Image (cartoon, rainbow, N blue to C red):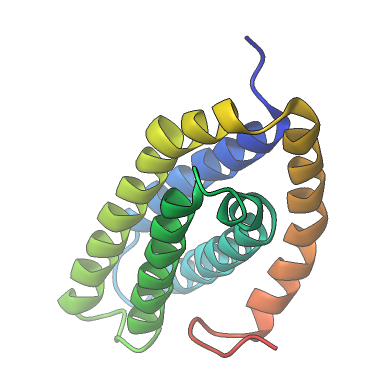
Length: 160
C-alpha cells in the first residue's frame, strides 16, 4: 500500500524534527550553535503545527469520527508551543534549560508517535484518496507562509 501524500509529508517533517532534536541535544551552554539550532527547531515546530492544523486537523474536526483525535492533537500542539515559550525565557547556560528541552523532546516525540501510530491510520480509513491529496497540497502551500510567520512571532503570540 502506498502511503498517502498528506501522511508522507507530515512524517517527513517528523523525521526532520527528530534529527533536529538530536543535533540540539548535543550542544552545550549558551553557544551560538545552540541558539541557531533552537531557533530553527522552534520555527519549524510552530510552522508544522499551524500548517497541520490548517490542513489535516481542520478536516478531521469536521468529521465526527475523527474529531476527538484532532482536538487531542491540537491541545498537544498548544502544550508544545507553551514549552517552546518557556525555553525562550530560560537562560541556555543553565541546567534548567536542558531539563526543559528534554521535557519538550519527550512530549513532542510522544505526540508524533501517537500521530503516526494511531491518528494517521484512523484518519486514513475515513478520508478519501482525493481528500488526502488535497490536504497534502494545502499543507505544502501553508507551510512556507507559516515558517515566515513563525520567524516573526514567538510561541504564544496571538495569531491574526
